[in-house]
Image (cartoon, rainbow, N blue to C red; front, side):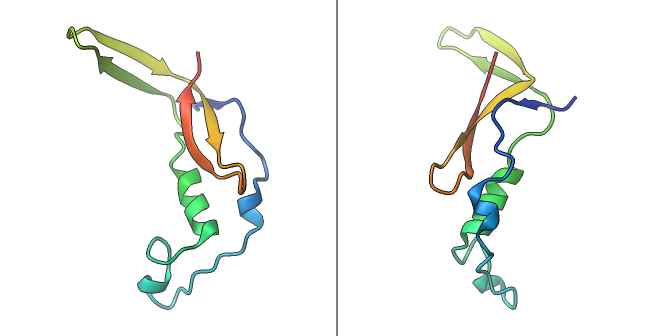
Length: 89
């Protein structure tokens, strides 16, 4: 199922920043060349879109399974690009 994002910004600032890449060469494109637009777009594409299961263990060997169906995004204040997310619920 589709994951629920509780605080997604519909029109973040980075989308209005034009791409600075020169697409004639891989050396002049993101990630080799700095481009705020392309970097932000790549970060946005890393946000999960489908629910997933997460398993983790503690020092004593106990395993905990969590079903992730809702996340909260963390944004860079200046460009409003995604810098992380956390499980909610």
